[in-house]
Amino acid sequence: MKKIAFVTGGSRGIGLGIAQHLASKGFDLAINGVREESAVEEVLMALRALGAEVIYCQGDIASASARTAMLAKIKEHFGWLNVLVNNAGIAPKVRNDILEATEESFDEVLNTNLKGTYFLTQAVANWMVEQKHETPDFEGSIITISSVSATVASVNRGEYCVAKAGLGMMTQLFAARLGEFNIPVYEVRPGIIKTDMTSGVTAKYDKLIAEGLTVQARWGYPDDIGKAVAAIAEGAFPYSTGQVFVIDGGLTLARL
Ligand code: NDP
Image (cartoon, rainbow, N blue to C red; front, side, top):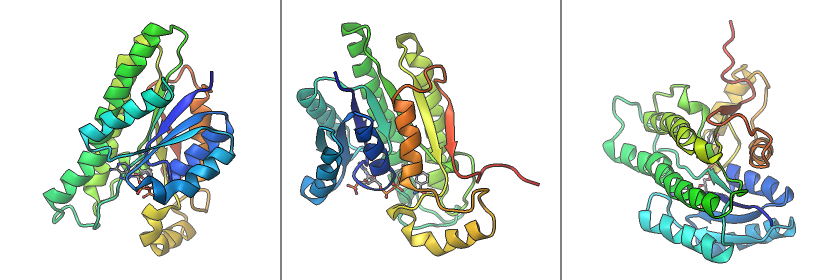
């Protein structure tokens, strides 16, 4: 039986990098995003060309009804789910100093990046526990893409950092709770990755990287994250639940 992975925000950027590697490793996929299916049809076709059966689950992860509908669609189509990859996320619309940033932006970022992810994880965790009861050899895992921003303070996007730090505790909580069911839960912390999210700050990061911000003097790519997540999803780290995988080219390596 093929394993099914649900990748939120899986039609571009880091999520697509993850979806490509999972498809290549033999997973079938449910891909989520907020855009209409017609806008991502080519991406879905390309993933299918890698050998995966792929469905699209359009919906805002911050919406409870959308989360319910997406999981119902996966259940109806595939019948089960082995891997949840919490990847969807947003940056603040405007990078504002924390002395001025608005509650509106805080709510928007926290609702999507933390609350939406938290309750999607809760719903999937309950479904995985059910599957484990029905089929004792069921294998499930949950992987959340947070960020180096979980520990690196950027004072012009505090709401983003707070949300990503929250995902760190979320991972530990669900890892602790799901231990008895042997469902491991992991956190992946990317550094600076070339995607649409960082396209507006390309010049800034080009300069910082050239000046030595990272030990490995280059941008990270969705492929770097995809490789790692596929290894985790395949079960390469069965005795590491609750742990953090940092994929940042040495950005967080303290140097003197
Ligand atoms: P992109 O902006 O390139 O892509 C974001 C994806 O998330 C899109 O597929 C988008 O859907 C989806 N998405 C956004 N909001 C929602 C929502 N409310 N509900 C469902 N889907 C949503 O981002 P990246 O690929 O750069 O980032 C992916 C993740 O990695 C994010 O969580 C981000 O915080 C994190 N990250 C990124 C880093 C970077 O340097 N780029 C570094 C560290 C972490 P659609 O395509 O339909 O618009």
